Amino acid sequence: MTATPSGVGTRNSELSPSGLDPLRTAWQLLTNVKFALFLVGLALVAGLVGTVIPQVPGPMRGNLAARSAWMELRRDTYGPLTGPMDGLQLFDVFHSAWFNGLWLLIIVAVTVCTVSRFRPTWHSVQRPQVRVAEGYFERAHHRAAFTHEGGAAAVEAMLRKRRYKVIRAEERDGTAYLFADRFGWSHYGTFLSHLALLMLLVGALLTTMAGFDRTFVFAEGSPEAAVFDRPGPNQLFIKVNEAYRGLDAEDNVIDYHSLIEVRRGDEVKACKTSVNDPCHAFGYKVHQAAWFNDIAHFRITNADGRVVLDTNLDFNSETTAVPSFVVTDAQGRELFRGMIPQMGTDPGETDSRADDYATATLVFPSAPGATTGPAYEIAWRVLDGRMSLLIVGPELDPVRIAPGESVVAGSNRITLASATSIPAIQVFDMPGATTPAGATVQMPTTPDGTPYLYIAGISGDNVILGKDRPVKTAGGYTYTFRGQVEASGVSVRRDPGDTFIWLAVGMAMVGLTLTFYVPRRRLWVKVTPARTYMAGIAEKTTRLGREMRLMGAQLGSRDALQDGDTSRGE
Image 1 (spheres, helix red, strand yellow):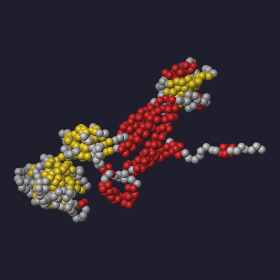
Image 2 (cartoon, helix red, strand yellow):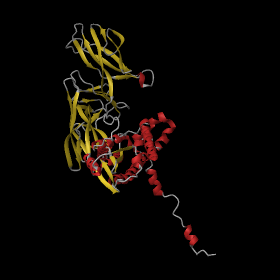
Image 3 (cartoon, helix red, strand yellow):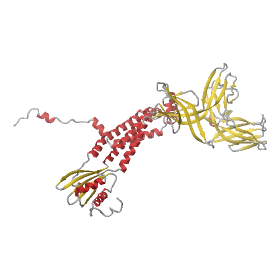
Image 4 (tube, helix red, strand yellow):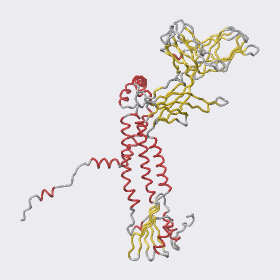
């Protein structure tokens, strides 16, 4: 017996490394189509959740008090689930860590998939397979065989004429092997489409994580206002010098724009901004988003003449419905035309505001030019979007009318012409207010369209403020309406991902065009002394065999064509 040399058993037992390779496993997972579909499905579900479940409004996201108040309202709908749902960030899906993480994972998967496709795509274009097995000419799906004169040189010349790149792969025993490639570079179209998807995802992620989009209301002529909540060297300040609204002959809005100043540090840029033509300043786009005229320049001084408030009172688009009347006498002469602001409130029979009535007094002259006349008590509320008004007074029993209807009181006809929405707001911290609820401010207009303020809660009687006509109350405060102010709704936006998105759209269009409209054709040709054989692959077409037979006919072959080959144009 021959002894086994020492150490042989040890060497034979040495095996290649076993177990999981984390990098290889991750690479295989990220290039797996099923895993990619799973990620896309998760993203769709997350998007659906963010659409169905109410999301925290943008301005409230950084305001803890406002966000807490908003969350309390959600408890009416979701009850005890509100807390856990908030913990999972279901009320702020598109800004949550898990959604951004999912988005980042999809980007990584698309990146890996794109990178993994580049090498085979490049190899297929730059180093195509120029030889195939002999049996391929007999079993290829697209193939043709025919006789012709001229040999390989004629075939090569014909293919070049048809814009094929021709390579003579081999010649042996009188047989020439050719490879022809047409539009080989179009194969990069699929890679370009993958790259476009990657850039689209990156652009969307940049927009979500680093973008800025908020809308502000800046009153015309007010001091400049800060854009960002936190001060810093990059803080922007915006001032609206003029808010313009253009109307046509029928009072339809045809244009609105603003002349603004944007300042950062010592740099100031003055420009005009509109809906479709934003102002570009310091990397931000400032769009005209809206136009408002429900702002009143309001000033209050105390008994010593010291200014305690001088501001633009913004009604924040809050309105109330008030009646507009037309009163005529027996001869048809107009005694009164105008709207009546709400002067008080009848609380109704319950604590709910649903049965509250707005109240006021309609007073009009007894004759044209008279300074006195009858007074009628009115009360109204809006039901199902339509005003219902109760009126009672001299020679008129209580009667209910709706807009467009009229009643006869003595020799006068009172018509409820329409219900009109006017700016109205409750100001809880109004200086000099006589009630814990503060004051109610309305801004109706006179028949000629001149605005004025009607204020309740600063005096024993309601106060009417005409422009620049101050009123001093018993509390020693003087209130002055300085006039109606126009304002611009301005959208300040920065989208760092928009360049990526536009490039992605362009690349996707080019990639799809190459893929669908510039299809690649690859032909392998065997030219023998007796016969020529063609086999090939073509993208997005099933008639390559007919095309090869037409090539044979072009070479002068009489046995290349089949029935029906010439029924359609080449």
